Length: 637
Image 1 (spheres, rainbow, N blue to C red):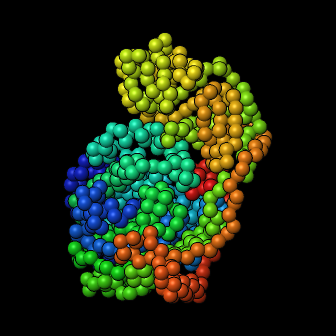
Image 2: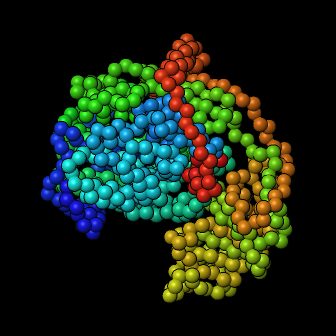
Image 3: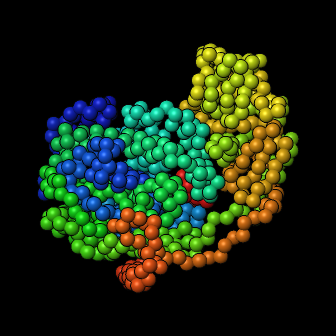
């Protein structure tokens, strides 16, 4: 394989030309390219029923590949799922399944990954990943990879780094590469893709208000999960469209990547597998994001296998399959024996026959602290069990900085939704004037009465001085429009904001909703929020908000009439996935015999895993920076 110059390589990726003129792996030992697209729902692909979906490149690949119509993950989040994808073992076997709040589980060294096995058989191995859970220190998933890029960046960057690595190999040995794209993962910020999908500009405005572009995006998900914010259908659809924008952007990069491999003569001798570690939720069960249970929208994933020479092209395989089947299928196709035991099954026989995979049971499992979840798939039915769960409840007290007293000047940053300013961060700043400052996108432009609307307030701009925080730019009232980001300082008088100074700001540089002023009151609310009065503006501080620049001393504020914390409970359900209700109609009371049968089957399956050899993961403590990042991603409470 040739060593292309870096500039040429980048142009190949971005402009889609036909680069190269030959070179491939040895025919009898094909390359293996395993692509995992984080949080990709199966139903977003045309191959799985989406009409005019955001994945034209993957749909084109599916036409040259085998599509598994009923493929599932083993868990609803990355930490336990990817080790299963790379080892062929269930979470209870490889041991990596604990929530990040209790440390970080490491894959035991005695568990072999696909990279280790292929590396021992002469393959060059490399991984390019973008997810905190996949970092070497916090997962040890780099086992067997000669090269492991753990912060590979967004989709274009990740693909570019892979191609750069590929051009540095001489082609005398086949390669195994694992690419893990994070882009569709929350938060959904499809900057370039949005214009290509024709997203309504109104979505941009709402995206800014919800702070989906800023570090406080998690507030929206947490408020919805706690029942503090209800999203109408049009808002949920807005989130879906933003998500589709991320999927479209990732699909476009993968399409260009595969075209480059094809033009360079690599694609024809490469087994390409595309899947996901889990799906994504859009209020199907009252939650956004993922990692909150074993629901269909979180477990069902795409699984596409394109074989060298387009063998088996256009085939569809029914029946239950799972991501633990990838490793044994790859080894079987390559004619290699597993060096260590795997629990998944090779799908090669079903592929060759073009038939449904043999009847089997699938298991999904995860654990978050004291709560464990288990799901068993058997034919058309699904059994779900939750044990030792605690329903969400607010704290009995609020712990706040001692310095958060009346007269302290603070800056609250967060989101604006449901008519409320909600802070995800409260920062103490140096004493200054007592003016109130608001920052955010304009909701309505100035009228003949010299008024505009910002964060729910009517702002009187008649006597304001105009400036700009943009270098070399001028700014005046005529330039204000809906969605324009501004910063206003002044004061409140009878509920009206009297502006003294207005500045235009760059939304791409400072896209935080901000309220800055003097604390004039605070109160703990029964739902766990802290109601903070900042120069007359009510700001609701989320229970998980950050406190910055405050001394370490803390004090407690009693919560009036707090909700009683419920007792632990066990819960079971069984569902017919072919019925119109799917996983919304529990058959437990209507068909108790089916419930008992599947409950017994699930317990038997669990015992089989233990008999097979449970792998105890090792644990490492997270450092402060990693805890902050995992908290932003919603994995750390």
